[in-house]
Amino acid sequence: MPRQPSYSRIAYAFGPGPVPPTIKALIWANVLMFVAAWLFPAITLYLGLMPDAVLRRLFVWQPVTYLFLHAGFFHIIFNMLALWMFGVELERRWGTRFFLKYYFVTGIGAALTTIALALLPGSVGGALWYSLTVGASGAIYGLLLAYALAFPDRPIYMYLLFPIPAKYFVMILGGIAFLSSIAGNEGGVANAAHLGGLLFGFLYLRVWRAGPMAEMKYRYVKWRMNRLRRKFDVHQGGRSDWDRHVH
Image 1 (cartoon, rainbow, N blue to C red):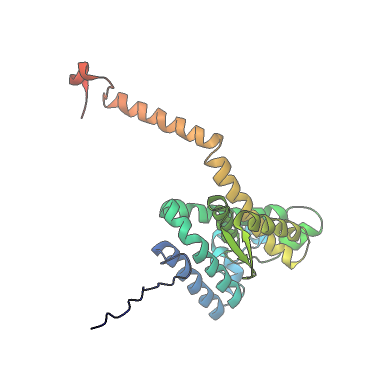
Image 2: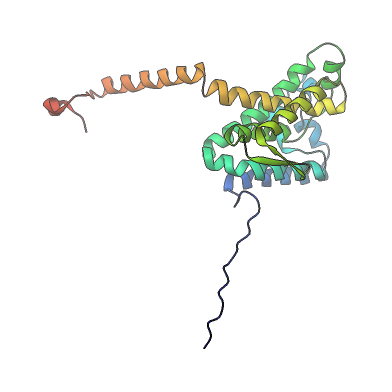
């Protein structure tokens, strides 16, 4: 009996893979808040970011809560798609704890950048002072920066058509965000947060973790370990002083 030809199985995959629980929880939180704001629009005024409300009325929760609100359907779709596309690999690389810390550092940092720019005199500060900013875009831009630092030569398709290495893609986005943030219009309001996400992401990854602050943290941990050794009478030594070891 003639042998049937064998065909190799070909598996097709799209995207970075399964969604880990952390990113899934962030996506669900954004979706639920989007629905809540659609049903009760007034909550956007209390949870969205407005520099006047934060500084004058002390709505100090807004630099966190604004991350979970979005201005429209396409706004949340693109942000959550980017969170999935770039966040999955970063969480695998960093772990859940550091990923969440970085996400909120860049998101809150984007809010602080918006508030700082709102204090500037002239049209730039005036446009930001009473403007309402919503969306996870600041944190998403922080993830884009981290992705470019982790995978600098990996291509990202700009407008889904043109492959550009991740490092140049983020440079282009940063330039656009900077120019738009000083435009003094509604686009400048949103892009101030984008610029803040990029700035705080860079400072956290390249200065806090790898710069003088990392050295200070290392020295502190080493000092604490030495204190614990002395406290519990733990001695380092060779075979000759085995009786002094604490196991």
